[in-house]
Image (cartoon, rainbow, N blue to C red; front, side, top):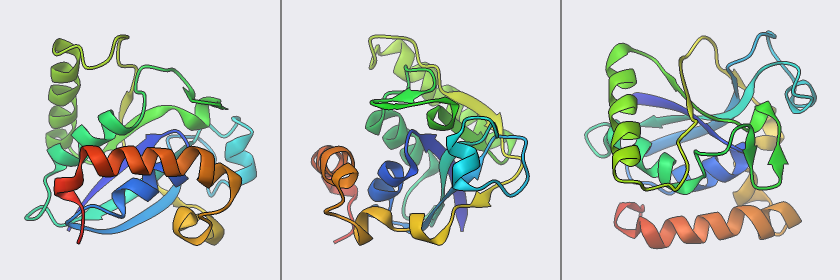
Length: 176
């Protein structure tokens, strides 16, 4: 089993996309990239813990490649905005990829360079690329949030449109 650690704004949005991909066996919402041990959601939301809301994606590399995971990530959120995704503002919502080894780092840097050369985004990509230190699982009520709360206003007006767009763009990679 392989893993990827990605933050692209609110973890509910990122989680909702990756749970639908072939080869993905689990997606866990959590926190990483900060200084405080065992942060709470409130501490992360304050912006003072240094952590970003991220997801830990476990996947079968024989069914879906790490490169595909990263390509999707750079397509489903705006990697050109610093500490912001839509109305979610603060360092906890930054675009971040946390790599586990040098091979992952090289793949991420290669894909970011390709996106830049192809001018996929009008503005420069500001996604933080950093080694994974520690991953802290978020509170239980954050797990499978979109699936469990589809009619919650944030889910209805923010998460659902992202999921619909993702399904159209990557329909060939969806679980049946």
